[in-house]
Image (cartoon, rainbow, N blue to C red; front, side):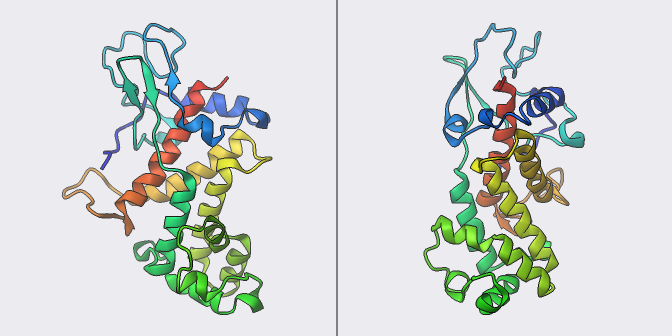
Amino acid sequence: MNKATHISNVTADTVTTAVMQNAEMNQHDLTEAEQIQLLSCSDNDDTDPLQEDDHEDTNSLRDENDINNGNYWYAKTKLINSDSRYLLDFLDPEHLLANMRTKVCTTGINKAGIKTEAWMQVAKYGKQNGSNLSLALVEHLLDKQNVAFAIKTFSEEVETAMKNAGYHIEANFRSLIRNWYRAQDEPGLSCYERHLYEQNLRQWLLEDVRFDIFPPPGRYVKDIPIVLYEGFLIHIDRRSQLYAFTN
């Protein structure tokens, strides 16, 4: 597990300023292609956004910051010393979304009060409640890696049906996942909105989770498989760290 370390060398001012400067400039929003590239920075470049002057540690991120009300980076970037480039590696959002669909439709996230029953009930009456969700998509998990089916599982129509049926916790979680996915590539969103939607999910993931106690979390964190849990957090942190490289 990537141990959470108290935050970093992309300062709060760096990220916040970059987000605000680009808030109304959607043409500069980050695409998936931009996210996965290796970002070049010179060892001696004074404008390097991830290095401090007089900082001898080769780690690209420092340990203290106050971004997002005192939060920390869950994962730091990798610095390739041989050619002074930063490697920002993470899972693609479609893979994460599809796996979260599988999680909520099979076991739910019981420790967070998120029950599979909510999706089952909505799917059972999918035609009547307007969600158009079917038991084939939920109970039988038709085509697990189908992104369109995953999007439908977390759609606005499903949220409305959940609220009408009294499943408010599940409806709120559905909103977090949907908005996080919208933040990836949906046209018309400002950088500020994208950052906000991602941070809302990040806050939920880290809420009531402690990494400073023994034993540490094992295969599951917050009742979510650790690979999926870390996948979301690393993806969100990488996107935030990229703002330091934007104009």
